[in-house]
Length: 91
Image (cartoon, rainbow, N blue to C red; front, side, top):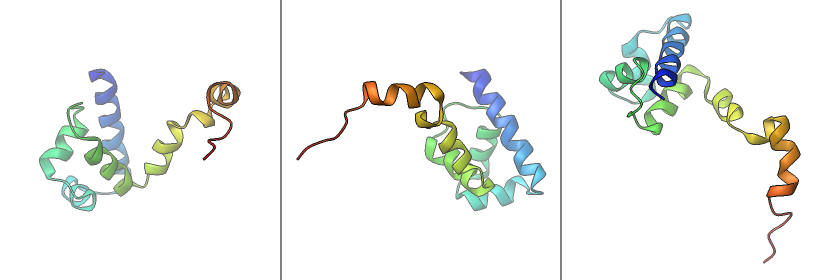
């Protein structure tokens, strides 16, 4: 998990630099402390999901993250959805 967090952190640093943002600017836009951004960018897996998502939103990649975790965006998810999920909830 730590290796994944470090990889994601490094990718967020790259996104920030590609957009010409300083760490101070990004932390302000994300509504988090500069130290929290540092922890995210260095791969601390103990940072809150809210802080991580705030950074993703500020970088303009939040929708891509949401899509990447959507099971219906995968062949397996689409194939199994009818088998696993109820057809309809009746009231």
